[in-house]
Length: 191
Image 1 (cartoon, rainbow, N blue to C red):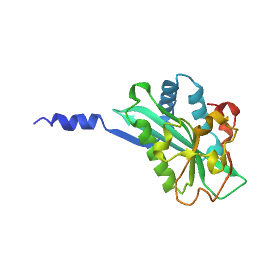
Image 2: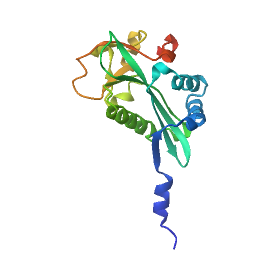
Image 3: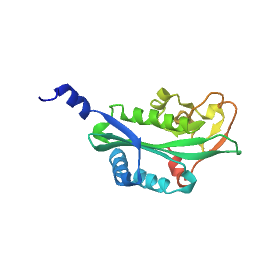
Image 4: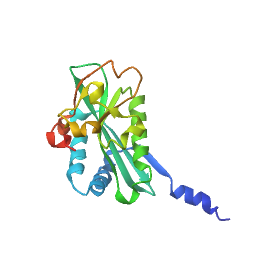
């Protein structure tokens, strides 16, 4: 009485997305290294996870066939002048090269926005690819009254984006987004 092959295949291709645990750190860092081909993002993630000014973070991993193939990190930020909005910055999003172009990044972004929304988040910012993030509702943030931690050159203005997690928050607040201390370096704000 063998199980039908279809069910088995479906099981093998199932993707699990869950919060990253401390015990996942080595896997998370290896995903970052593989995705970006350097240690820079891995070191950034390691430092952000240990940065009190980045807390609370939302760190999610994608697991496929018992292997961590993707990671996304959202860290806390705040507005200047000080305002009561709860904001996060999405950085980085990583998927290992052999698992790219399969919707894993999209699932990570969607799940992260869901988790932040449920936790009472108001806005999520990203400095990212202007052709990728709008599908999740991200819009150019500068035009909506939100300046990046460091000035974004005009030619890259479209890469600085924001998505509201609840209605009425865009237009009610504006200012400069101040990121976690670890991200607060000009080199992280260049395209």
